[in-house]
Length: 248
Length: 248
DNA sequence: CGTTGCTTTGACCAGAATCAACGCGTGTGG
DNA sequence: CCACACGCGTTGATTCTGGTCAAAGCAACG
Image (cartoon, rainbow over all chains, first blue to last red; front, side, top):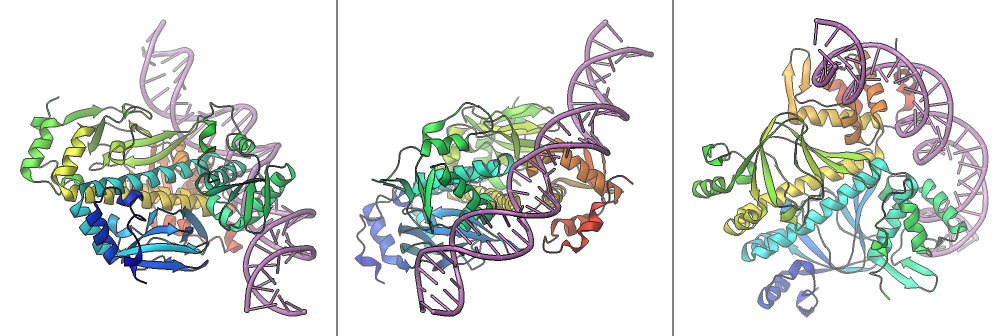
């Protein structure tokens, strides 16, 4: 698929490229390869040699890690504009996780060698990457904290809040997560089982907090969910964080 | 305390500085400040403005995060040669955690502004940092995986193995963790309680796996511990046997 | 239409947290 | 120098969250 048909106005707004000149952008596009992924398709798999790095243009992907004993955890969801597969940038020879499309998606990719060139040619590029990876490290620590100190209900509440914050769409009934997601997926995000997630979601449905059908979850009362997420102790609450940012 | 008394052969072997020239090293030493920390002292506290970044020369520190509801988790232990407090490098204005000495330690620090200079003056420096942060991200994901899928016994076994791997000293009885560490500390590393850690350690002591006194742990049988860490939950056959060990 | 994948629910049980109490060493201050 | 308090560790009893096992309903898809 010819990448040159893509206008570079597509890339310009992306975090990754915000430090590049127009000329550099054009050059980048020359070497890019586009990928169209259908639900279930993978961009790459855990353990493969990290030969390319990617940017998601459209759709949603999930990053999945397989444990030695056959279990899975969802590392994160990739949103449009995010980079992924940058293992080589951290001097890892192979991808530490697999990436699957959860809906139809479009991504660009470049050979990992291209990364070196960008790093060399533009000092701000390194700083941007460092910030991105730093943010992920923060997120990981937040998750460790939650897994270490919180109960399942709070963890699931927070997971949902994060999902609607990043990928929520307003609907008449509430905010819907705008890609297909199963109970099993949520279990793999929160370190629990699909049974527990199902029970909790049923419970919340009864209480009017959420609605849900197959692979689809609508949060009706964000406020109530925030209250659940912060339950346990009446500590000082920084509530409103997840309130805005929603697509119309 | 005058940093210039430090010979730069001290810094040269450090990962952080492996890409710098001798001249650059000297310049770096000019601006460095040395810190001598006694057990319990802190280098900085969570939430403080991230004005400086650090390298540990000698001793051992622990990085601690306080949760909103008053609990604590140990993010990691800092070993000699490690850098810490690099929040600003990821464009974080403040330190996300506190750092305490667990034994007498010596560290160097520089103003965060100096970081920018190093980044600009030496392209390999950025790559090194990226690798360091990338490694931490890997570690964090490993921990998430463990918290999500493994049981307490395996997690504690792994934690001990990691500790002796990074900071173990050989002794006649086995490998000792060469800094003071309490049950509570281990609990905060593994997302459990000091009670559970204590019981498990007592159990292991009875079985001859470890020895331990106050704030001191010696692993006698590393192999056995590895076996525990890798114990697959799919084999409940031996479960009964492993249970009747509490007190002879 | 049958097969497969997702979800729901109930019954049961176990791992680990919580609650409670005590022992031991160490360091401190009188 | 001794008494005592405090930090650390041990252990028991009890509770309970959430995992496991089992079965069935339902929606999608070929």
